[in-house]
Image 1 (cartoon, rainbow, N blue to C red):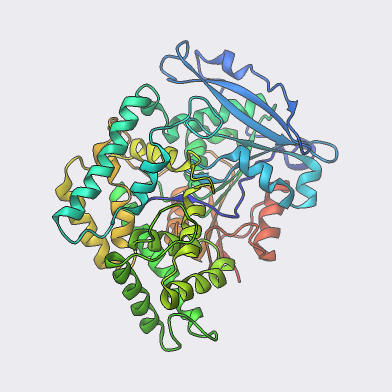
Image 2 (image 1 turned 90 degrees about the vertical axis):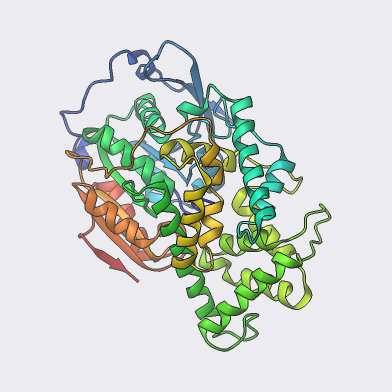
Length: 499
């Protein structure tokens, strides 16, 4: 399972008047030919409750044929509380994360200075949530079945089950949304973002992207380097990596994070993994995984699901995104180990895949798969996937197979990617700040180091800490550095480390 998303991180974008920070590069390119009418749009904002305003914009489905089918993008803003200086665009990650819902939920967590001067603007990228058409392929029951399917297949029967649910996902998307699938990738989403920048009246792009939002932001900067005013890429994705390399490196990130959790757990009273060493705690966790492969845990939600190994792993992985969730994970593991009750682990996993209490899902997981499968090429035969899973298991014994097999639908995806992974340089851009957390589970720290080096104007800002993304996690060093940069355009010193 490839999830580039953030639980509490934000994506912010701002434009500050020339009197404060200078104008964007005067050599910014004009609107691409043939789509000037899209750039001429302005959002017609309407009240949508809670102090928010909502609207829509049109984008071409296929930028090579801009007069054809259109996409209708859903956008939201919380207007500036003082004298407005510009807009702060927000992308919360994913791919598949709803910026509209994120802004509604989290906009008032931003600092007073930012909220005073900037509209907070969120958007649902193409294929996501309220943007039409959205990626919808599977029923809720089919998604339940996919997430419960064994991702550490021990025999031919379990492998056949994994192949069957993966093919089913790809086949259902081929049947239900064939015309949308080729165009949901990041390159088109980045082009959409420039139209949104123009539609809110900003001459330059100031952007905060979290998790997958860093890939989207870096792609934007590479396409439109002279339109970048300020850009923060937090929890970075390294764009030059192949799909296989992403899977293995992400698995290693989750293993690093679970090591940190285990090391912390054995130091507290009543750790469900014991009071010995980190190694012994991890052995106990792996024993739980193996036990639930044979005998699933019970579930008190009354929805008929049994908590098998894959759902236990999903719950543990979900809790690793934020260190504040570690106490809940300890309680969940205690219930699982001592009482055979997997209810809390199941709830944690449901949060990650956005499964609602009524059993329905947002389209986050479906959009996530659709974007990932067209952003990078994947092998179309099963043999290389088996080799990759074996390699991942060796590199990351706890989460290696879980991550690799979760992306298997891409082997059968109806649209083959023509995008080859490559470093993104964004030559000519103003300084771009890349933020990395040393024990980030979902986007390993080395990705932030790599992206900062690949970008011609990259500036690395690091947090020695745990969890996914660094901004708005309560660290004053990170918060002040990011806010100062977004407001003034002046980046922090290169290779700054916050503790």
